[in-house]
Amino acid sequence: MEVKDKKELLDNLTKSKSSFAVNMSKGHSVMPKADGKQLIVGKNIKLSGAIDVCESLVVEGTLEANLTGAKYLDIVYGGSFTGTAEVKEAHISGVFDGTLTVTGVLYVYETGDVRGKINYANLVVEKGGILKGTLKNIDNKPKTILD
Image 1 (cartoon, rainbow, N blue to C red):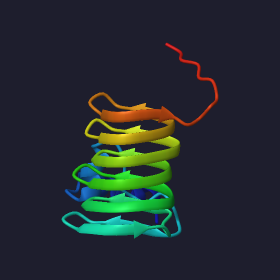
Image 2 (tube, rainbow, N blue to C red):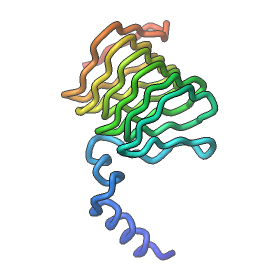
Image 3 (cartoon, rainbow, N blue to C red):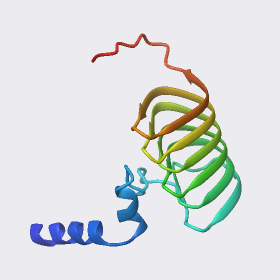
Image 4 (tube, helix red, strand yellow):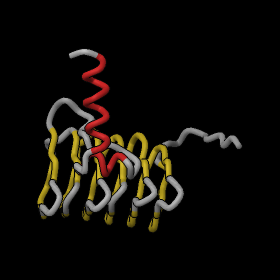
């Protein structure tokens, strides 16, 4: 594939009306971040249960679950997760309600709404993002805040 073709492909992706292009504008990509075990709960899908063998979870629909052992959680704009999740990294543009533990970085984007018991090592919240509940920093290292 020539460089021109790659640029054209990227331009077409960002101009399309797909959920990928729409959610890129909401702060992050819905593309899974792991090469291994991935689960995508699609738009208009409702799913409930326990998920314990998953590296990357993308929620576009409605999920009620207990998620353990995952590396990445991505709740896109319009997606909803209720329950418990323990992950390395989370990107929230939709709604999370429950107990969330993030051992790496928790990103809450402008349309993100995170409620419940929230344990995090690092936290990034865009203007407009909502955090409600109990917040606890689980990284015991001293923090330096720079202006």
